[in-house]
View 1 (cartoon, rainbow, N blue to C red):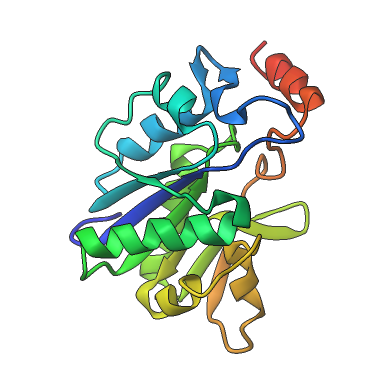
View 2 (cartoon, one colour):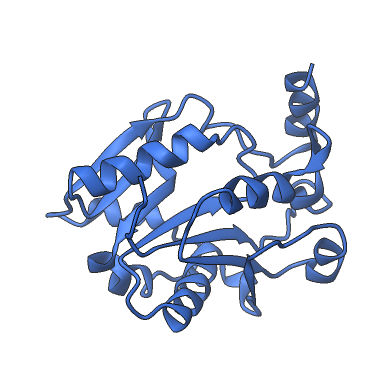
Length: 201
């Protein structure tokens, strides 16, 4: 359910993967690097704007991915944390589509995200007319998530390593959650990479 809704999507892939020691965006999963998997998934939707935020290791990453229809943003301030990447992505999305109504945020290192998860978030956001729809996993709330334009000013104010889930603490925020069984798993360490290989079997 997207129809004529002006929905943009931003994939955050600017981090340095310091705990892993090499770009997590390029870890292989099911025959493709993680970042390519999420690009391909997002590209299968008819989003009005598609933004990919890169930063650390940008040259190496660009050489190994097909960006498809995505517009790329080079976040020179990636070291500031996720907040700077969200700002960079949303600013570009609004420049390309000033009348944007919703923004979906995805990460490059959540390999278990599915088309159904993204579609559920969109459906909840639009059908229930909420300000945000977050994924929920193991008692936590976070991304993938989608936000209405009412929250764009708050997203543009994020700084440091503040993620979008900070908005949950807005006292009168009207939001809902969608269960995401595999949401907790991301790739930060070599142990995570090994577990990812096991998931392919």
